[in-house]
Image (cartoon, rainbow, N blue to C red; front, side, top):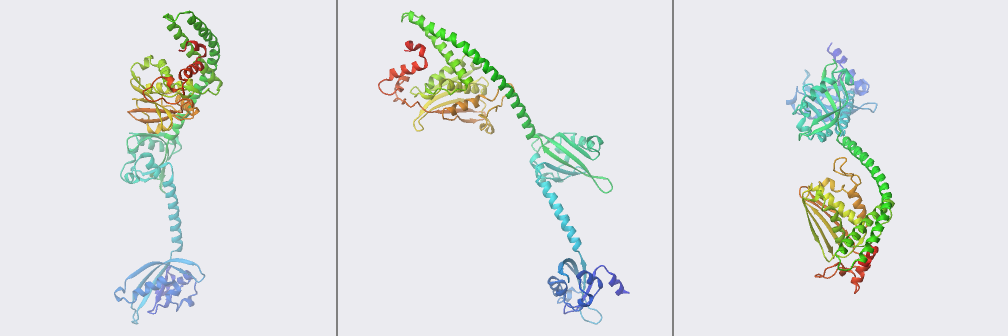
Length: 523
């Protein structure tokens, strides 16, 4: 009866003698090893089940103290057909009535079990990697709100680490008050994607530092085999980049609309400029004639000279406007930088916005002429001055300095304000077209971009240094006009820059080129 039970066992059963050879094998062993039953009898354990089984048996036989104890391990062996199988073997050493030690071995084929375990392990590893590497945050919690999945995306989104969250912080702490309950209510409602599901919804979560972060949530409930809720899982998508892009697109759209309006205004202004040019020419001609009619000691000559200068400036402005409208190449000529800065400030200093701004001018008196376009450079200087005033909110100190760097052989112009400064992340963007930190409608983001383009056209670049809360310095290096040389220290006056013995005549020629209609009265 006992042998019948052994033969019906699902486990293979073997009996080995002290020479490690098979003395008994049930029929199941033939099914497991694919050897015929008659062939198994007399085989050594190594021949049948491999060297690991032999080593296990050899370790037991010399130790009588282990008799009666069961020793188990997992092995791999090769069947008669050449297939590799996995098995669990348990060996017990005992002494039967005949007095000869025997080893009783129980072998269970676990090949299919190991394969299933491996497949499950690989699947779990795949899904674990999938969850871990997701850009979106993935968070799962049981029905008590205890978090058990918190991936890298969730760490990046919330600022918490998985170690800080899993099993330690309740899921409701990630939401503003009452939001977690509202989410569960929607998950159990058929109106938001079906019972147990939540279609993508925009919400806010609370990060580790207390910041409310906009995100998109897609969620689902997890049920067991009986339909009971066991967990909830959510996919959290950070909306900050998308919302920032939408704001940027909206701002860009508004700026493009403004640019179209400016383009139309520019065309209108160009037409008006043509109309203004003629009366300006008349004013200059008749004022010049009137100046000739007054004797040198007449006080009215100063007023007439002022009229001629201001009318000449108006003609320069009109000329610049027409050149801008035509996009023509600006004429490069010797430019008195100090004079250009002073003329630009003349337009601004009397404006109400500059009343509480102290302007310090440290202008090098022995500065050489620069190679450039006076009108365009004046536009750049005025733009930077206005930006500085806005950065100081109409109250502070603006220092404008000029010097000649003999090592670099460049004229250096510096504008230093005591304003709010520029954040480091914006320093590389302030010259980008349409970039502005001003509110919509307060600026187009074209001023510094245009200034940068003008200075690039002069073969140089605008340099900027800034510290938040301290102020900003814009530095503009310009090449000197080739015909000019810086004069020795102790000398002053622009005439000193014209080379050779023809200094006064050179200045006269320079003035004639800039103001051809009033050359008779320049000096």
